[in-house]
Length: 353
Image (cartoon, rainbow, N blue to C red):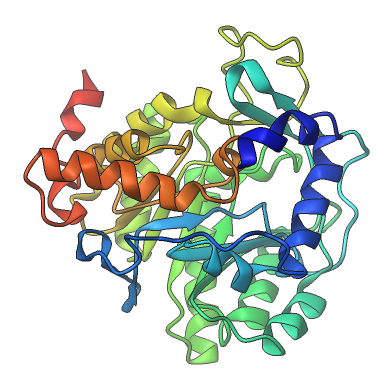
């Protein structure tokens, strides 16, 4: 059904279309999709100690202000991550700031953490309890003089209502945010977060979302720090500020983070490298180009235990989770696999060549 309306939707400004999608979900205007695989044991898993129906999550960036997470669970997502949320409300970067690359099945965004702020969003979630596994993605305000403390404010606001908290150090749209990939700054950040958790007597799982635009040395150092501090999981990866040369769309050189299909192989290579270094001691959530059963299958083979998507739904529509599960089921059956977890990391070395 979505394919019939896509050409009309794509005539609308991408950010306007996104806001309309949020309103539609709030009003329950999206159709109910029959999911024959809702209770299929092939997809059952456990994330941060909680059972989930499937390993397909909604990535941060879609539901920035925690307005429709329960509606997203109805669309079939196994878990949902909202945000990025900053301590104070902020508008983000000037418009236009979202661009579709239709030929490339991709988006470029330079939104800049536009959100209603931690207090407003915390109040909203507390008054509308989640019906599934909910992650909250946090980051610093653009003009903050103490960005490390901004993350601690996020921990204080959400540690008792989230199932996990993601530390976003990787958006290319907040100037110098990626400096937290530096060994000393990253170690200091994670150490400070753990101290804040101890002060709050909180056991909230901490997840780190990293950039795809990092060096081999950074991969090694980040892995060491993740293991040292026993971080619960790592999300690989955020959008890329690079990798434009082979794109076809004329908007490819817009400033911002590139997501979608062009990120798929880049993400898979990075997932495989971290899988090798983390030795399955820290879970990997793979993001980038997930829009089909085949693309999810490749992420699992590379070493991801779970996947997330956002851009895929822009191009495939709200029935994407059911579509992915149907296609993935066929692949697993054809390979004699009873549960997707059997294949995690089984071919990670293929991406290391």
